[in-house]
Length: 490
Image 1 (cartoon, rainbow, N blue to C red):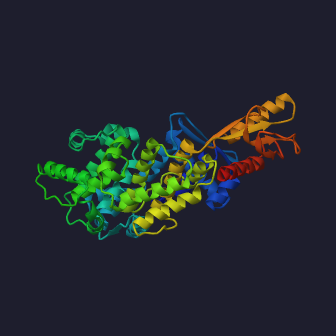
Image 2: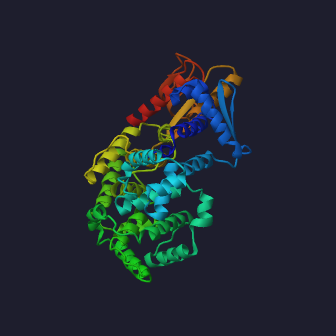
Image 3: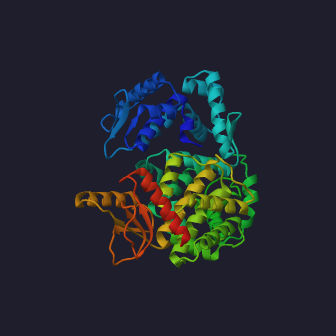
């Protein structure tokens, strides 16, 4: 679910303009923006005007400029465009409706038309649009209430409040005194040690859980089917005792499934440290779906990188990351998308000296097979899992892929030679596992880059690439392909 889905179309376009300008480096031609937005120039200029008014409160930190051809943005070093996006979303009727349901559980049409000052038809339209977005989370607003699995409801609210609340606000307000005491007790009971970031996550989860715990009835069918195989898990059994003991202080009827909700959160939301997970991994069951997926995918990766060997520390790190990916895939549905996934996907691919996108898809298919599921195009959880797999593979690439040595030997005046050598180094240095340097006849190289079509024979060089135009995008792209081919041969 893209966060812009909570906005009206015009507001979503305005936010889209901001994001596109940022991704373009702070300046972009209006023709490119018109193609991206799919609107007329008149509508585009109207959006820019509205956006200018909206940015007025931030004018000291964020300003947008348009000269009739180029759109440019200027931001202070201490300002993030996410602040503007958060304020846009929080002002939207759809977000306020979601927020209202969290605080008051149900509503009547009369209550909301008065609160939001909109007509009944507009409210019904907003609910209909919101239900389209919520479908991915397997949730639905019906009869004035949010309906669905309790785990999904808490997960959805956790994502909404975690990502739409500035981190400094979490630090100031999310960690209440009561939550702090619970987390301290939890650390002692489970022999864990949470970092600040994780404690803030847990505190928000506890706040949401305390709000939801009194609601009856709750839906646990999906949770029950998935959690039975975890009943003998040592971490769950300890956590269950803690939850029952702690909640017995309150005059509430506690559902048996409440312990599983917290267990799933702790093992899925990156709150366990790598060290704590390594200890847990030694005692957890080996036949649970998530454990099987972790092992199966890790083995698949090790085979892929043969004959390169994984050091034990790297293997532990990769298993830790896989465990978070697979727990999310198994237990949850939906993902809140704040960032431009395609941009991140492209950046991650460019870091690698060989092609990893296809292998990421293979890993996702293998893990989903463990859960009797299939990849769904457009499914945000699946699509972001692909990005996460690519990120893990980039880490492996950086750690274990053997070094590829590239020499640069340009025949030209010293001034141009030095400048163009630097241009080539800067254009290629972000690829993992590369050493790029000026040619030294005493060293061996996998690839030599030169500007002479028939150079003298390089005795210590495996491959040669001749530049067509100094610093051209074509040459850089071809060299990247050449490097990836060299990797595959090795």
